[in-house]
Length: 113
Image (tube, rainbow, N blue to C red; front, top):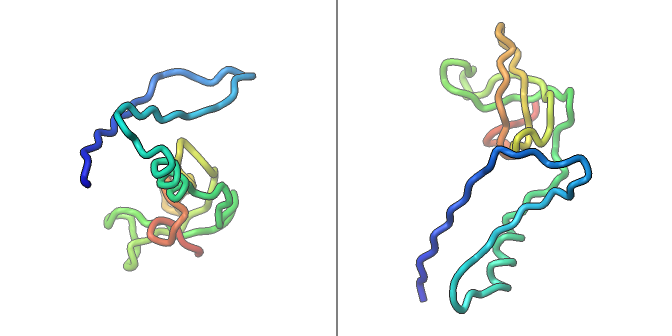
């Protein structure tokens, strides 16, 4: 049976306190929800905290056509991990030292140099 689902989320401009436990919550409102099915589905989407690249590693980041080499990627260096919800923050090896994010730890976004 197909059921409609509306997912809505937002952010508030607040910072975690120094001793505050960081926690994210999803709240589902509805009748006869399949709690186990929802939990299973979310756990299947959970990413690993283990990343392939470390700070300082040379990588190739997928970027827009105006910045990319023929394969769609540009050389860069990982300067931060888990930055604003993105797996990587990468400083491109261009004249401007442009910073980009690698949102997901997959070759479609970031690959080994």
